[in-house]
Image 1 (cartoon, rainbow, N blue to C red):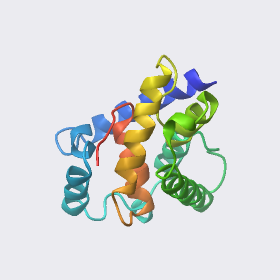
Image 2 (image 1 turned 45 degrees about the horizontal axis):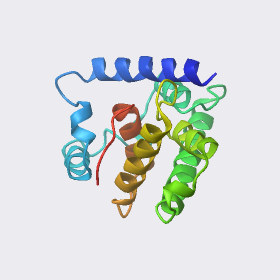
Image 3 (image 1 turned 30 degrees about the horizontal axis):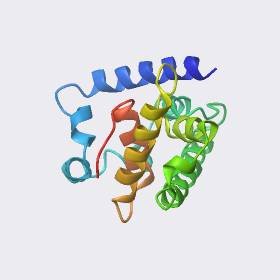
Image 4 (image 1 turned 30 degrees about the vertical axis):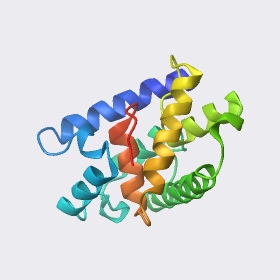
Length: 161
């Protein structure tokens, strides 16, 4: 199931990168400074309120392992709730010693955030999760779409604060 979701994530990531080729790339999200500059350059692009079609909302839900069944407004609400979960969990994980986490906790935390878990070692996953948490927590506030789109753009890349 996880490897199937990782394959789907790679497809969504490739599709999105093809759509914005020449405008936005993964490199625009590798540091919090670059991500902030990208958000400033494209102020409305990453807001969930700017999603106008159900196909995009379904793609985002699929990326995060969420159900893509429902009306457009249900999908957006599902994405907002997922953002709130990730954001709160990131704030909690930022206070935890990552060495105290079990392998199951690390894999689940990565999977929830859309970080691919198949074919990666546990130390790599721990590093990816830690990098994401530090990156995410470097923002005092973040619009739900900004956090979710950043995850989609990064896929397996490890950002830094």
